[in-house]
Image (cartoon, rainbow, N blue to C red):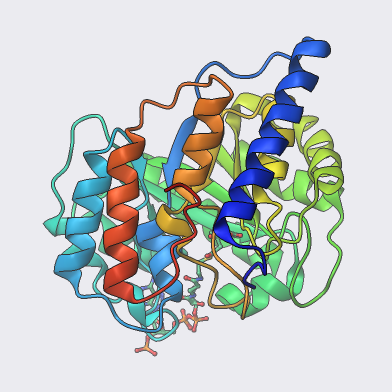
Length: 322
Ligand SMILES: CC(C)(COP(=O)([O-])OP(=O)([O-])OC[C@H]1O[C@@H](n2cnc3c(N)ncnc32)[C@H](O)[C@@H]1OP(=O)([O-])[O-])[C@@H](O)C(=O)NCCC(=O)NCCSC(=O)C[C@@](C)(O)CC(=O)[O-]
């Protein structure tokens, strides 16, 4: 859902928001994280929703350039059924083709043991299982109930650990579901805890359709933090209604120090139709830098990558910076 405001107006709004937030932090002596890990999800979450199939060589080039920008995690692809998500059908070729930068992790989504077996064949070292706090979304996304999905993940995680793989856990629809509407923060907390207890080293909280607000973010994180330590949580917010950055600021106040984002704001979800993409990485890095939070990322490089990939895909670039 495109904003009706111009980019210049949106940048001004962002700068106003950051200046108000900085004053609040100062006045209330709020401790923000000194360093935030930015998890780039564009090559997977971004591209999975693009109608035009991007050739594997272009995905490989995108991932290599992102790895060279200082990002420490670049989600690479997913080992899901190509009938369900055709854009990820070249998963093995893409993973095998990328340069593996020594300081960069390349997690890949895996829904079941079949996906894990494929991932292991090409030497994947980190996987992500992906559940949700909504029954209907789980059914539409991975064709099973929440309980069944968790049993599948248990098997995947046990097998992954035998191969010394790191496992990240996603929980989708943490602030609302495209099919069933409201989602109880306690349900988000429950699914997060189960995945954490199963051995996920980090739980990424997905506002899949971008309907979060600062108030909802606060309630959701208050519930989840009672079950999972805050340093094991990541914010994975979509920007449908231009609220992702405001919600990220709330997450930072809560002590969350991992933020997922997508280069140029590519993305969405094939099972949450007509929603805008993930929050844009360039805007997130700009936000963090403005607040004096380190990311280790070269913003100029990111801007060039975002410009090149959106030109190639002939789609809007959500980066607000000139
Ligand atoms: C999970 C399944 C596979 C269940 O799909 P199913 O149809 O219930 O599975 P099945 O076990 O009955 O198998 C059906 C066919 O798929 C094959 N198959 C089975 N598993 C695999 C696999 N791993 N890789 C490749 N092929 C597979 C299997 O071999 C069989 O092939 P056939 O005999 O018909 O030729 C399916 O529903 C699926 O692939 N879903 C994909 C969902 C997806 O990728 N969604 C987007 C990611 S989630 C997301 O974006 C949200 C997130 C993470 O970003 C956070 C947020 O924003 O909220």
